[in-house]
Image (tube, rainbow, N blue to C red; front, side, top):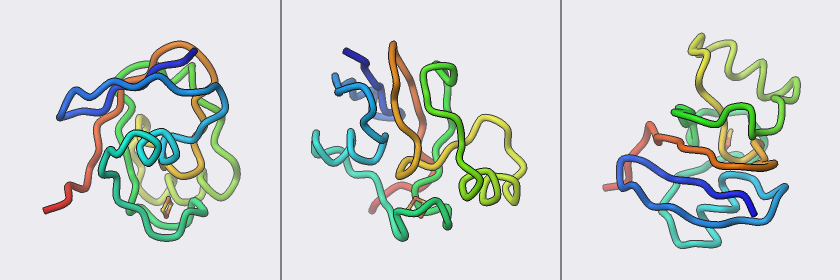
Length: 96
Ligand code: FES
């Protein structure tokens, strides 16, 4: 089964293939902020440190939102699915 590590806490979880990164966080009690859950904002913006090839390809909505950011290694947790292998991500927004 795929695994995901969240930085900076270095928390690793095993997930079902096809789970979104946001679902993986919620299933494991990891505090990942979100707002629209539709790929239209950047509340859940992440940097993919490793394993981009193990994630679903961005849909047009996510591509449009990420294009505004102009950072190549970023993804939106709510619409990005973990398909296989291992992925390491670093969140941009931290909850206080
Ligand atoms: S919560 Fe808005 S893009 Fe994911």
